[in-house]
Length: 176
Image 1 (cartoon, rainbow, N blue to C red):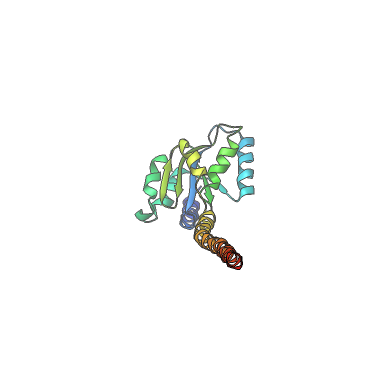
Image 2: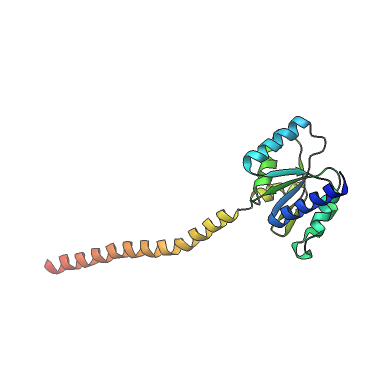
């Protein structure tokens, strides 16, 4: 790779890190070519982009961003073979890793960057799979907001029939 190609790779990575708020750093070393291809296919089917890039290029692309992003916490995990999983959902790559590792021991999670929070270590996968996507959170909030209104309407409906029953009982009592 010549200098121009490296600069282009860094620029491409910089754009990708800028556009993505969710990415995972994984170790796929000692995986067979067949296993890597199988994992890549699984990622592609689920909409997760997998890239294997030199750590120095990744670090330079991350260093080009503001310190506010918190990428500096990832630098210490850029050693050894690294595969980056880019996603539009915070929990999808963790679910893919968990699913794939039912039959294999790799890839191992080095670190995950989820909306400015950094999760370090392979033991974080179970936590990351439980994260809710933006759509799931919006749905939960809407359900919570609708719940009190539904309770009030249901109470009014049941209260209305109770009041009507009481009025009818009082009318019947007066008539007798």
